[in-house]
Image (cartoon, rainbow, N blue to C red; front, side, top):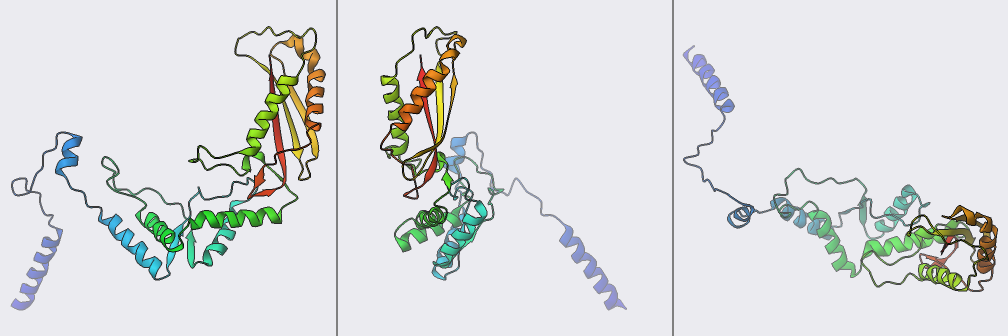
Length: 283
């Protein structure tokens, strides 16, 4: 009987002990007083163990052939009518050749506060894995695969009409890269303006100094250099000049059709049928 009472008391004591919270004692704990952000930087040492462990895991995963590469929303085709679903399917197929599994889940920032200048990193696994891939293959694997996928897509849909905005362009960080098709259209606009003759009676008076009149020509530039579906819209700031609409639009039509050689936009390095837009301004 006494033993049972003792066990009951012991069990009750254990329950009380588990529920008891350890109190913070300011007298025995180490307190560091911070008065500025500079104090935080100089007096506190942050060890980002999560990042360290994630980086090591990425290295080991790659060595063991268990790579899972996070593919975020920035990795997509420039071709607007190339659906993300098809692109991701093709990307997964190409990555599988390198024993890499894509992870298309959107990753959100960690709940750990950044505390100053990014003391806790949120993409250590991803960046470390990308570094391992780059070291192993000696080139930007993702960018290379993306070009392969887009090239196959263009060849599959070579008779489609592509958007001018989706053309091959310099990378956003390549400020000196060439954009031949865009430069050609700019030169074409200047050439037209230099040879254009204003009709007699054209009134250049404007309500505001910054106002200007303009015409926008839209058409399909075919692979063989022929022009289809040409349409022109003209806006005059001075309503008096609207009577000259047909005069200006005929000049533009004749000018465009007289071009013997076009600089075609390319898509994955391939010439296709594409939408073009040509704009000229007037006094």
